[in-house]
Amino acid sequence: MLRNFLFLETRPVTQRYYVQFAQCVYNPDGTRQNKSYPCHKCGNVFTRKNNLYNHLKFQCGQLPRFNCPYCSYRTKHSSNVRSHVRRIHPDQRVYVLDMRIKQDS
Image 1 (spheres, rainbow, N blue to C red):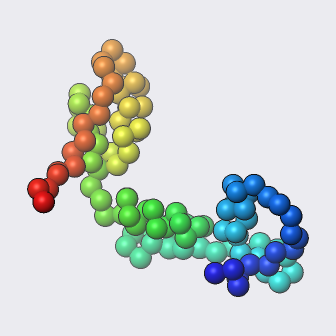
Image 2 (cartoon, rainbow, N blue to C red; image 1 turned 180 degrees about the vertical axis):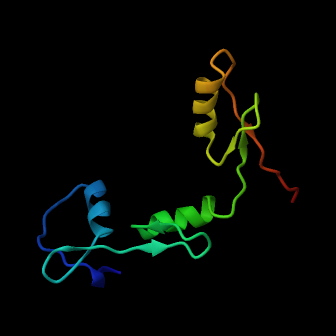
């Protein structure tokens, strides 16, 4: 995996900086290479492979699983329902309905 990277200097770095730095691919002249990772299902394009993996695992082809308890609004993220209820239904209590069907083992 590290064969695609050109490290120009060695110095102690924080873990966060190292992760961000390691996800970048550099050309031999030291300039950053722009890579793209397209989703084969929907065509969305991502700049990081990890974002594509998360998209495929949690979003692409998935039905919206969170529902507003006061109207027909549905979304894939519970935080979007919370924002929706605060904005559209300001006098109502904020809670989220999870529409995921649990299967018995």
